[in-house]
Length: 209
Ligand SMILES: C[S@@+](CC[C@H](N)C(=O)[O-])C[C@H]1O[C@@H](n2cnc3c(N)ncnc32)[C@H](O)[C@@H]1O
Image 1: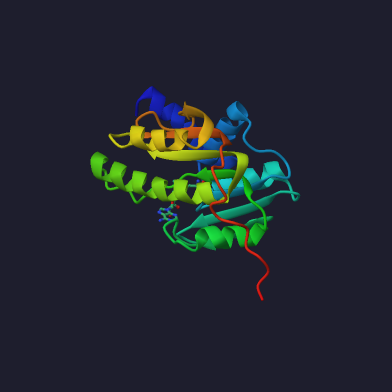
Image 2: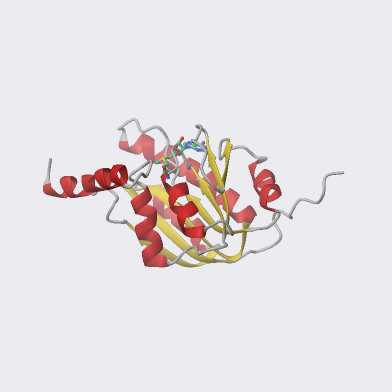
């Protein structure tokens, strides 16, 4: 193992010691330290949330005044102050259900989506970008004006196109590779601030009659 890999692996040990379900928890901690994306009382959704490392960080940092939703294809062990929907990001009724759950637009949208990786770089890239495009469509429907987002992206040909789509909708875009992300992994994060809501794309659901 190279020195850099050994260093990265420290996060796995740290996660185990500190009771986090995934080493990914440290990626979110580092991103939030740098970009100050969420704070107590925020309404946040985490897409691709299982096993729940990011949700644990949110639960610790937002306190019981915040609203935390998680979405994943796979099940997630329950967590205090967190509601998880076991659904696909591709599900077209998800936006309505997420808005109905909080009855308000979201302050922060997080996506750590990853397909089951095959190891074939191009193939994994295309599948990951396709998931991220679904996540972006969802974010545009449920984020409040001025809200923030993070999208995990796999490097590759289509990443620039994805970045451009995002920059049409957010005033500030930053690219980040937190220290907890393995150097050899192709993932990086697009951190977005100040969502420019073009129009009411998805109104809040009214009461059910
Ligand atoms: C890297 S893991 C997320 C780790 C998580 N952030 C944590 O801290 O524990 C990526 C997740 O994306 C989920 N995923 C993949 N395709 C999905 C889809 N179509 N809809 C929802 N979740 C999906 C996977 O099931 C997986 O749990």
